[in-house]
Length: 468
Image 1 (tube, one colour):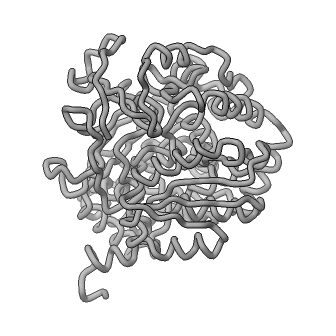
Image 2 (cartoon, helix red, strand yellow):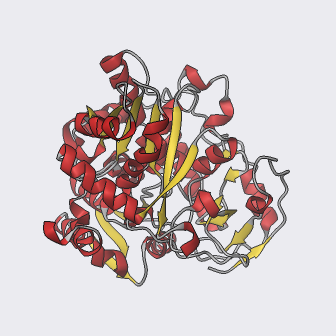
């Protein structure tokens, strides 16, 4: 995607390498931004959601209010609304609606009931005893080693964490009076979740999906069609599907709702997705208190664009005694150029309506990401994830395709749980993490999806022939 360099107005933080402060002004939603000062005017608005009544961040973060983002959805220099004027009215309406539903007792009661009875919450916090024993034997000669727990988002209706957000946003689409919902999906998890939510709420659903991903995720494509969704294919991957879904929304604003599945895009989309996914971390806090009378010591999640990671992390961002660890997809290796490790090697720029870290070349061309975990194949991360990297609150590492496959097979054999290849990246990092932890440390890994969708990929690329 072509773009033009512009000068940054902010002073770079000294701890971040200088090359990470180059900002690129990209084409946004298929419409070039010709007047940057108009975007700056948009970003200076102060009548966005206040979140004053939201309890998800509670008293723990009051001493560090910058962790919440400001009323314009900016986290430090990241976020904002880099969009054409035609979208501003709709985004303002969405801000106001989000502010309302987050504190509306009727909406929250309906959502809580649906999450319990339809989605199946709360999801277990499961002690993986054999996995714990495996790392105890592998890493230590004495002592008990850390305990490894899995947050079982794979057990939710549709097989991943995506339903938490899809259901809530589909309810907002209904409140807007929209008859149609459009989405983009990569691995199909968000597509299946949205198709199911739309079926439940009697909404028309169109899912945009790249042909490359359709070939890899045929079972999810069939599920979406069975649920009544129209699956619209296009050349490319999730990156291309996202652009096409947004264009379709822009052309049909009066009747159509764009249901974002991840924490990217213009404000308020990243904040909205994070709020609806934050149920993961809230449950984890309560369950940890109940199970061992304290908090987790370490939280681990894979990072594509960031929805499952923020869903787990956000509740604990203000707890500085809890380590937060995100694991990106190193693909075939960082030196190969075939990876999705935006935070490891990316630069700052504007893409799909907000400022964040991106995979781009020296001319500002967006690079094609790669990962065996299809949902991780996106050339950027959300603004809040970018901010958490820059402030150092979250540690970010990487895992390769090969390491993710091995971790998937290990958990399958030891615990009888087949994780999604996306979540397997987080599990893969345990090899490096566990030997560094004290005895008795409590580690929670977000098992964000189930892996039945990935069986064909495993057979083709990773599973030993003796198991086929």
